[in-house]
Length: 371
Image (cartoon, rainbow, N blue to C red; front, side, top):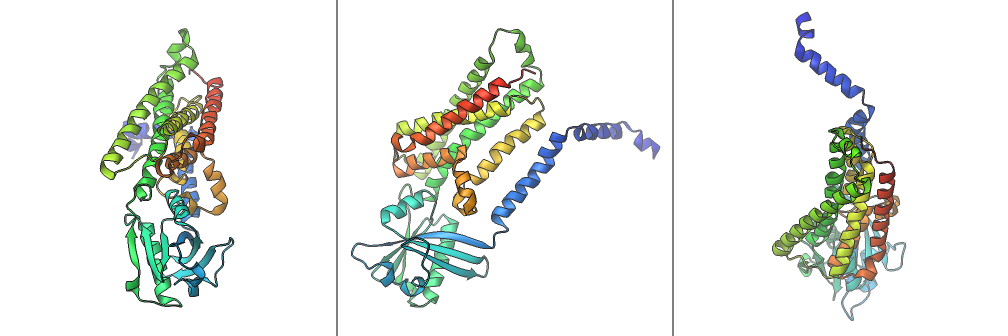
């Protein structure tokens, strides 16, 4: 037994464990932060007793309002908070309580809500017949279709299932892939800037490479601006390749202003470059640096509506989520891609992103350490 405890391998393992324990920050980012993330996401997705989804209801020209349509006997007893809305609570065996909010609106407004990710299903009422518009590749839209179909067929005013018709959404801007690609472009800017700038500076500081530059006449600002410029060029190439792939394979098109998209790209790079400089301005420990980077990028990647609409989160969190840099960049990019937005529609988001980058860059430059 004594030979085991005196063994070189055992002593090395104990020494490394003690090194880790002496760094509280490493323990927090390695153990505490994942627990906090699991707790936060658990609250958002698994502890909710109810699931709320929104559906647009439109009417063809000359048709009656929803009060006189095939949904009348079902929805007339469930008025919503706003005029033209109907709030229908359901109980589903698999999902529990499901609250469906039906918005009575025009086809133009329904398409805008669809492109923004607020809804995933459109129901058109035409001559007591229902037409369902959704992307077949969107699993949530398929689920909502089944729920609405069950309500209509089994509720008051029952009618035959063969009367309805499914209209797959294939028009550019209304598919799930049209929602996804602008979000991926925004996320790519954040991830590339965060790891390409933050981790590069932290790694060079830990290897004493930045310390050697103190004796040179080089300014800190020139070093950081050069690193940001190089990374921005790489971000442009990465974004261009992703768009070309989406254009060739999925038929993605930019319906809005190309200069507006370039302005957003430039502002997004400034925002996340400044945040990255601030993250990496002090620490020289790569493990702590990894934790700091993940603490910034992971929550935004989850809640900012990259893969699914952030409307699914609790209502009280929506105003906060909308003001996150990644959310602003993704929403503005989607408005250019799918809604035909120009510079006048996205200049506020671009200005906010640029100001965020300038402020965080100045703060990071002031506290920047060579070693």
